[in-house]
Amino acid sequence: MNDLLLVAFGEALRAKRKERGLSQEELAARASLDRSYVGGVERGERNISLINLNKLARALDLTLAELLADLRRTSR
Image 1 (tube, rainbow, N blue to C red):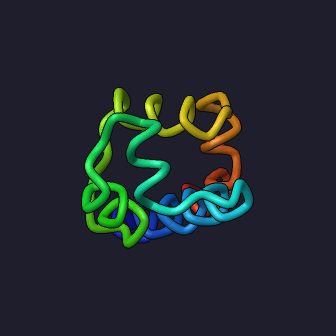
Image 2 (image 1 turned 135 degrees about the horizontal axis):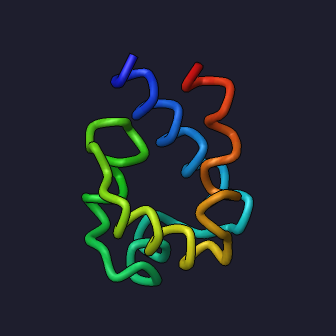
């Protein structure tokens, strides 16, 4: 289940990033994170911390709730 949640979050993050026309590198720079870290999150390879969730949400001009909204169905 946890792996599925990480993959689902990564897919949601990628979709939000692409909606805004950002590359992984641009999102990483805005969030003060490494591009390879963002790639790992998008592939569901990283168990992301709350601090980094917040950095990514802010970099996408979203609240944490908005960034996580698509995960409600997956986490049940």
